[in-house]
Each structure stands twice: as structure tokens, then as C-alpha cells.
Length: 139
Image: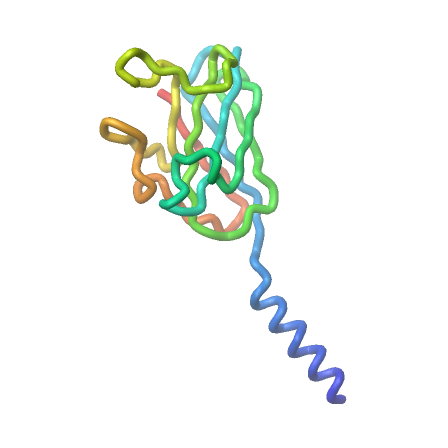
């Protein structure tokens, strides 16, 4: 009897502390050219935000005509922010002009906009606690 109760307590405790995981689908829209790649970065904190080497998850996918989706499987429930860009010329980087202004399309979760720079984490963050799709427009 004691073994049964102990086992039940351990099972319930383990399930309480097990972190739930769900799929995150990132969909991009708002571009016409299907030549190129979409680079996606998912960040789990403001401290790591916009530092690709500290991104929680990275994804690259070939652009499709007007709409592209990429699925991150089994992402732990937490608060995240997503940034992405459309690498139209496939050189692996977000191209910028002489003044540092991007010449390729980019976007952030919640379709957050930046002011003289990327959108702030506080505007791009969202709670991930179920299978979900976020749509980022590159218009």
C-alpha cells in the first residue's frame, strides 16, 4: 500500500513539474517574389532578443509564392518573440543600404513595428501555451 501511494505521489509531482510543449507555426505573408529564403528566430527573453547567437530556436525555409509557413515542433510553454526576414537574394543576411536601413523585408511577432530599429521585445512578445500559429506580415 505504501509503495502504491508513493508511486502515485511521484507520478502526480512529476506531471506537475513537466513542462508542456506545443507546436509553434510561424507564417509570413506580404511578399510577391518566391525566390529566396525566410530566416526565423525565436527568442525567450528580452536579454537575448535580436541576438541570433542567443535565439532559442532558428529556422530557415524556402519562400513560397506570397505565403510561407514554418513549424517549430514541441516548443516549451513560455513567453517568446519572433523576428524574421525575407532573404530575397539568398546571401544569408538581411541586406541594408548605406544608412543601415534594411533593403529586404522583415517582421516581428504581433506585427510589431520598431522606431529607428527593430521592434521592442515588449511589443513583439506573446504567450505560447498551446499549438498555435502566428502570422507576420512583411508589407
